[in-house]
Image (cartoon, rainbow, N blue to C red; front, top):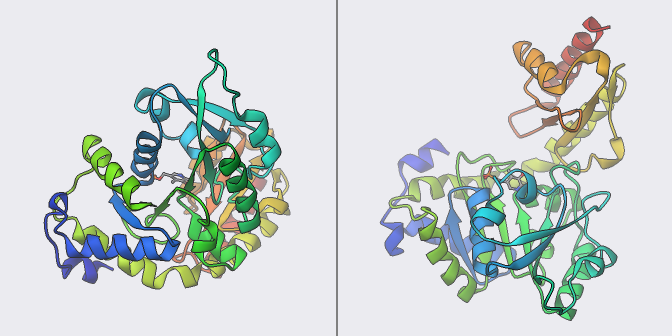
Length: 330
Ligand SMILES: *Cc1c(COP(=O)(O)O)cnc(C)c1O
């Protein structure tokens, strides 16, 4: 990947002259069965460009309440896009027609104008859970009936495709836009793609400039993205097997609680019993022992994520370290 970055052919992408960025945008659009793509700095920037392009201020977005855009993107939907969020509670993070029908506002001067349905696939906070092609068909069906648009936050969509054993295009069928990250499970250092219809991407390109995302000789980053798309998707099933093994091993550790039923991809959440201290403290202690997890005090859990540089042996070693460290708290 570093070699590809060093030898990348580049140009000024603000003038649409970077061949490596162009080919990555075209390739990504083709992969998802949509017209055009836009290279952006991050998942957050891709999601923000989607909000600013699909919506006008005073419109509303329907999203599951734990979605990344709702909680972890600094509230840009409110402060920058000027939209409101109608949040719904979906057990596995998967939207259903019933939930959507209940959240769509009727035409009434007292109410905001429902504009966009937001799907997160995989759903990070729900456990890395997948929205299937048939779940998505039900969602886009509701969107068509009510003349709404659908955006997918597909930061982790290649994990969903691997877990469901379908092409990523099947997870974008009938949607208006999708954002995916090169920098999560795919393992590139930087970058995301926003994909949609040609006219949507043309407008999003202007929006990206507005939010400071017009980058010049950025082919050095796109080159890494090409390598990520070439090499990493086929490695994801192993990450998922490793995550499941980690979850099973952690479920036997006294003081930890693991919901094995939601472990579908490369994310493992484990609840931290009171006797083990706060999740953030427990995570910091594990870091000292060479195991990196994130602690979320607000939900009482830690999150471990596997990727292609973590082996099955690494996972077993991590589980042993976590087991032994938990025992020191009792
Ligand atoms: C990580 C993530 C993002 C944001 O990506 P950044 O590149 O960190 O801005 C958005 N959505 C989901 C579901 C994510 O997991």
